[in-house]
Each structure stands twice: as C-alpha cells, then as structure tokens.
Amino acid sequence: MSEPFDKGDDGGGRDRAAHGERWNADLAAYALDALDPDEKRAVEQHLAGCETCKERLHWMTPAVDVLPATVAPQSPPPALKARIMDVVERESALIDAAADPDREVRGADRPRTRKGFVAGLSLRPVLAGLGVFLLLAAAIAGYALRDGDGTGGEQPAEVFTAKAERPASPATGRLEVSGDTGMLHVANLPPISRDEVYQAWIQDKGSAGGSVHASSVFVVSGAGVGDVAIPAGLSDARRVMVTREPKGGSEHPSENSLLTAEID
Amino acid sequence: MAAATDPSTARLERLADEELMAHVDRKDPLAFEVLYDRHGGAAFSLAYRIVGDRNGAEDVAQEAFLSIWRSNARFDRARGSVRSWVLSVVRNRAIDALRRGGSRAPKLDQDDDAVLAARPAEEATEDEAIRRETSRELRGALESLPDDQSRVIELAYFGGFSHSEIAEMLSMPLGTVKGRMRLGLEKIRVQIAESISAEGVLELT
Image (cartoon, rainbow over all chains, first blue to last red; front, top):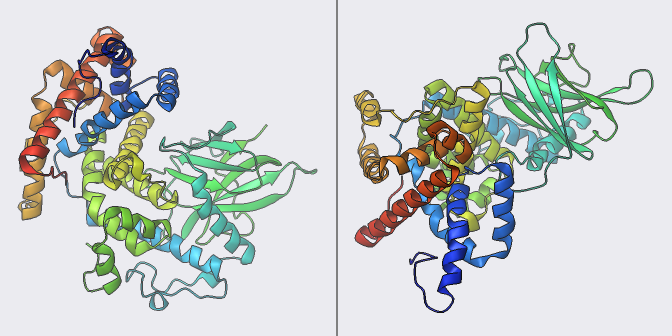
C-alpha cells in the first residue's frame, strides 16, 4: 500500500504536503493514544471531515497494532482463565434465569456450560425474588452503558466520588450518572468469598431519609477493582451505597455501607 | 484450552474471530471461552509488559476480559481485527492500573529474552517457540529504529505517557516528540508492508 501524503508534488501536491505537515505528526501521536485531551478532540473533529487523514490514520494503525506482538510471550496461569470463566458462567446463568424465571439452573441442565463452573448452582435459593432477577438482568445488560475503553459513546453527565465508610478502609469509587442510569467504578474493596457478592443500593430523596432500593450485584478483581452498571433509579437518588451480600444479592442491605457516593 | 470433545466448542473453534464475536454478543460463554483461548496469552503478555508483575497482569487481563464480556462486545470491525481490539482494551486497562498504582516508571530496560530464558522448560512448546520467534522478529523491528524514535513510542504505548509528558521527561520540544513518533511509526509500517510482501502474511500470534 502506498503511503498517504507521499512527497509527490503534482497538481495540488504542495497543498497536500502542507496538509500532511500540519496533521501527520498529530495523527501518529493520536494513533499511539499520546495526545492530550484537547488535541485529541481537535484531531477527531478534523478526522470527521478529512478523508485524506482518515486514510493516513488507517495506513498507520497497523504499526501500533503490531506493538503488542513485540513483547515477550508469557503464559497466563490456568487459574486466571478459571476465575474469568467462573464469573462469565455465573452471569450467563443469571441472564438465562432472568429470561426464564422458572428455570432452575444446574450444571447438568446446561450442556453448553463448562463442567465445574456452575455445577449445582441453583438460582432459587440465592435470588430473593423476581425483582432481583430482573434487576440483575438489567444490570448485566446495563454494562453496555459503559464507555471505559475509549471506543466511543456518550460521556457521563455528572461524576461523583464514592468514599469509604469504614475507618482506614482504602476503598474508593467513582459514580458516573447519565440521567436515570449510571456506572459505578470501585477500587480497593476488600476480598470476598465465593459465596458473597458486592451489591449496590440506591437511597432516594424521599422524606424521612428516603427509602433504600436494591440495585446491581457485582464482583471485583483480586485488587478489589470492579465496574457495575446502575440501570435505573438515579434520577431521584440521594446516594448510592455498596455492601457485601450473600451470593445472588439481597432485598435489603445486610450491613452498613462500605462505600457511598453522595449525589447532590 | 476449551474441551475439544464438545461438539459445540469444536464448531466455535472453527469460526473466524469476527464470526465468533457474534456468539459472544449473544452472551454465549463457550464462545467467550474460545475467544479467551485465542487471545488470553497475548493479553496477559501485554498486561505483564506494561504493569511489570504477574499478579498485576492477572488483574488487568481479568478486568479486560470481563469488560469485553459485559460490554456487549462493542467490537467494530471497521476499526481493525478482534485481536487488536482485545489488546487495545487490555492496554487501556493496564495503563489505568499503572495510573491507579501511581507507578508509571517506564520499563524500557526490560530484558525480554532474559524473561523468556527464565521460564520453565515445559512452557516451551512448538507453538510458543513460533510465537517467541515472531515476537523476537517484531521486537527486532522496533529495536532497529533509532533510539530516539523507539523510546518515544515505547513511552507512549507501554508507559501510557502523553507526548507532552514525554517532552518534559526527555527535555525536548513537543514537536520533536510528535515528529519522532511519526517517523518511528512510519518505519514500522514500512517494515510490516515489506514483511507481508516477502512472506505473504505477517503472523502476529
């Protein structure tokens, strides 16, 4: 493939060269994700209307895509795949169960399921009612709200800091609210057992402190990091809280909040 | 690796990445497992290269794959391959982890060959030998760049530094940093084109 903005100087070549001179270095920095936010926006605005620069960026992108292949290969530990697939299987089972609440999900009933990951998992004892079923499904589907990987989508309207409620707790968080929905990003939450999950709660602005409603359940990485979609209920929310709950979530908080985002 | 005896898995394993993503979109855990089997190694390797320790790399890879699983797979084939997309998610997560940890010291002096030599012998399978050789060749391409070009590219891609941070770090004008990024990427791009024309295809696994 020939390189866009080659040095040719046939009719209009000088203009092309000047255009390339202006944008090529910015495009390289953009491809490397090395521009400051204002410059990045300027490049994206320019790209929206410049086919030549789009072509140039398209030509240059493989040079960035190849960079991961320059690192020394490492074999991931088998436990990593087991942990990831464990979460995937659990969430898949919850989605299936939300679509068909009467279905009791057991490993033997799910031939497409990897043996051992959800064998014996019954949702009836762990989910406290259809409301939680639907909420979980909405929450999982709500991950589509997230735009954490810089690949496009709407920016959150407002961002609130979530603070630890326990002394000396390093837990932190950030709540991004867009209308009635949002995304809670947490870090440094303490480890939990396989029989527990974290659960988000929404306290509304009603009188007498406002009532507390169950929201999404989630798990975190070994470093206590996780993201959870809040699929509804934030337009009238006073605060969002996080507690540790039995697997499947609860209808009412089992403990005081570990992490709270005040929405004011 | 996913169970080869499962016919569903065997069928999924025959799909191209882009076709596989349609199944991942439908929240098929077996399809997701195949996706992990294909790209988990590269993802972990990249995460390890950026964060510099295995525990941190495990966390990054786990966050990245769960993000992909939960995000309704916002893969856009117009933006490149599935592998490039997966690795861009991993890279973003790894850079976030570096920033959270406050340790953004660039690991530019990492001796990848020493890392490889120190690994257990049982990991040195034939496939892995090919990957290692490919990695060495590509690393050679990066290392063949003038130091000033490879340095700014590595600081940006593996260190997560912006060009203005790099300019301050290296005490050079902003325009010089961006110019070196441009020249370096152009040379890598030309080498890729030459590799493709010489060998028909560039293996990036």
